[in-house]
Amino acid sequence: MTPTQISYFTFGIVLLIALIFDFGLFSKKNTVVTIKSAFYQSIFWVAISLAFCIFLFFEDGSKIATKFLTAYLMEKSLSIDNIFVFILIFTSFKIKESDTGRVLLIGILLAIIFRIIFIAIGIELIERFHWILYIFGVFLIYTGYKLFFKKDEDEFNPRESKLYRFIRKYLRLTTVEPNGKYFITRSGKVYFTTLSIVVFMLAAIDIVFALDSIPTVVSIVRENAHIPFSPDDVLVIYSSNIFAILGLRALFFLLKGAVSKFDFLQQGIAVVLGFIGIKMLIEYFDIHISIYISLVVIVVCLVISIIYSIYHDRKSSDTKPNQID
Image 1 (cartoon, one colour):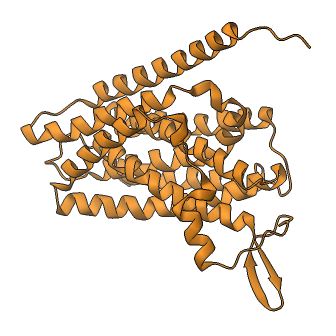
Image 2 (cartoon, rainbow, N blue to C red; image 1 turned 90 degrees about the vertical axis):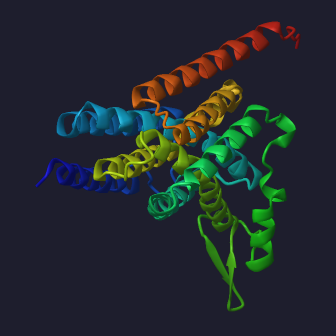
């Protein structure tokens, strides 16, 4: 076997083992995931991802490993943005803690399937129509601009979204307490419960986020747009996406109580999206930004936005007047 084939085989084995862990040990039915459990699970998923990165370093070289690490960090940061929307959805539909883990797991599995499909389509489109990269570049700059200046009043409202209205129009729904069920039969008719609605919305939201995610990771991994995708690059694109998605469920429970502490993370992500968009566009002038520079930019932007968010949160807490009971 060639080094690339060994890498693909190893990724397949690791993915299979990870899914077995997630289905079996980490997602028992009607179980509430504690902060402590979510913390250890998050460490587990990050450790697996870093272990795969180390494997790529020894098997395929430092450049491929750096591409994976850069793409994984970008995907992980974008997935945090996903989680904030997921929290809004679960809160809006009042999903019980005991049902949340399973619903998330199904949503994540659907997300993995959709990502595999969309990545394949995206790679094929870019290979056939090179100019589409410039459209993606403009789109990422626009998305970064919108995200940077996003206000609180623009926050996503699940029950007022076009997606929810579409679901209500074409599916038979029930407001009966689901009790862990996704479908309920009444008088010979099948009704979808709120758990099904949330699963549909999670899958659809991930498709929307994939419009940012896939062009971003493709641009990070493919340094020269005029050179076809190598098998190693395709492996990095798939593996970085899937490893980031696998840790979403644990990260959801870990960040659920800390949403307000990362107020400025979206600005950091927005700057990175703008950087990647510019990186795509300047390739027209045969200017190529090194993967190592991309890694530094991503790390610096995310670290600064997280540190400033924590600083701003503490400063706001200190300036609040003391209350007397």
